[in-house]
Length: 117
Image (tube, rainbow, N blue to C red; front, side):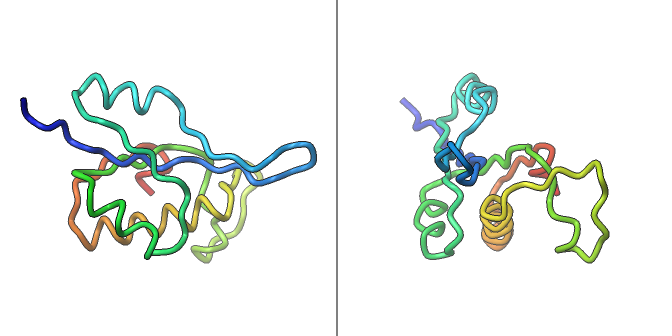
């Protein structure tokens, strides 16, 4: 039997707040689609150190970058807009690092919504 491809899926992050513990999560539709395509989803927590992400990416056949809220426009030299809901700092840092590393490796990547940006 042929090995099923391992596809990394980034996770969202909610920072601690009053009455809420920090947690990472992913909407089930992302991994359900990968399973239906005979791929195995591997969740990538919002890691912000290259030395933590590299060993994970070394084992993957591709990456899916999920949608979410918005990137912080100020980090791109743009003015904030009232309609913008910014992702957590940790999610943004992790996603930017994943993008940098998969681009360097020329890994197959599917970006959805925020993941395309």
